[in-house]
Amino acid sequence: MNQRLKTDFLGFEMENPWCVASAPPTATGRLMADAFEAGWGAAIMKTVGPVEEPIINVAPRIQTMKKWNREIAMQNIELITDRRLSVWLDELKTLRKRYPKKMIIGSIMAPGHDMDAWAKLIESMNQVGCDAVELNLGCPHGMPERDMGAVCSQDADIVYNIVSTAKAASKVPILTKLTPNVTNIKVMAQAAKRGGSDAITVINTVNGIIGIDIYKRKPHLSVNGYTAVGGISGNAVKPMGLKCVAECKQQTGLPVSATGGIANWSDGVEYLLMGADQLQVCTEIMIRGFKIVAGMNKGLESYLDQMGFDSISEAKGDLYKSVTSFETLLKHSSSEKVQVNEDTCTGCNLCVVACDNAGYDALLLKEIADTKRTQGTRKVAEVIVDKCTGCNLCVAVCPVPECMSLYDSKKAFPYQLDPSYSENTLR
Ligand SMILES: Cc1cc2nc3c(=O)[nH]c(=O)nc-3n(C[C@H](O)[C@H](O)[C@H](O)COP(=O)(O)O)c2cc1C
Image 1 (cartoon, rainbow, N blue to C red):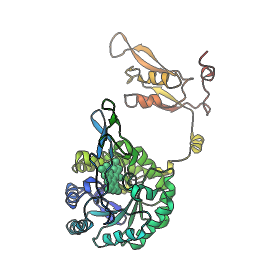
Image 2 (image 1 turned 90 degrees about the horizontal axis):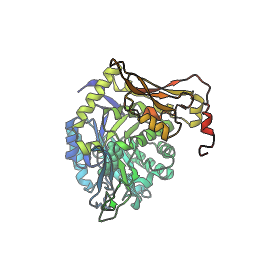
Image 3 (image 1 turned 135 degrees about the vertical axis):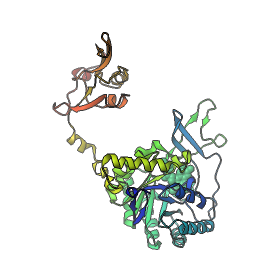
Image 4 (image 1 turned 90 degrees about the vertical axis):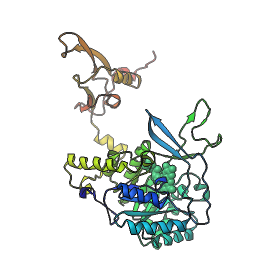
């Protein structure tokens, strides 16, 4: 075990920041044990609900979206655990004995109107020696119809009631897991803090429908021709996750357990830099298995080496503080222009098409002498400086790393648009 990866989370010293999220990879005690053996620092049991709630899943309930043969997103319409609470409690007790150095986190869900049910579930968790309990207020499908899951974190009063009930009953720290499917997650995070939550977990899955089979003319996730809005997870939801981590951290200052789109070590580092304190993974494990944690540890270690950090806590950032309003951005803006590195430009034309068809018409291809050959020329991109507004689209589409870049043109800001842009363009 590499000492430098040790991470303190809610007073528990995890051997690394990686945690298996509450989901199919933690559907049984045996799976959680497999995760620990593979090297995960923590695991959160698949959410358990009130005993009297029947949990019946539909089939199929999982579908992925691929780009270039790689899964970038997943939709699921799976419910919480369909196993008995008593079996779970036995398993959690055994896990506690076997893995004293692993962080074991319970996960519970009950209706938003039934505080007795929440308190009962917390009492059950109190019996088994979990290090913390996560309140699942985020499941977007199946459970909301029963007043559970996402509906519980779409109303600040309900968040407050649940968290304060759980906090009063719990012997261990409480994490409140919020849905991203709200207009303003800060309000929900604040209500969780008011209720006494020790940490926030964001995000549960994002509402969505993964796609349509255009020839069979039915949804990719089809239950005999019908579908339902489900939860989207996987790498594609990382931008929503980063946004929610930033906003919850800004609003509450509480520790944040980040979940949403972590597919490798560097996704995790992005969350750490944003301000997260623990890193949960679900979809990537579902696709590639528990063993990915070895590569994620290796990646983290070499990142620490490269950056000269001695520990994860040293590597953590507070970029959530830099997430600000558009008005503030205007105050900090300068007059940027793009420049082209002619040595590395391949003349592929992608930037020219983008600039031509998406705005400002500020790029063209020109011929220059090809110095690698004794005679002949090659094409490179050229910027029409007066037309460039520094929007960054060409930098974003350029396939050659650091071939195109922005620089401060030192001209007055806001930029002056080329006169042709303001004239009638259809004359
Ligand atoms: C099939 C499936 C089932 C899930 N079940 C639960 C659950 O029971 N409780 C819960 O809190 N989150 C559940 N989640 C959400 C995950 O814990 C996680 O928050 C989400 O998938 C985002 O992380 P990811 O992009 O790494 O998958 C589930 C996700 C998937 C894909």
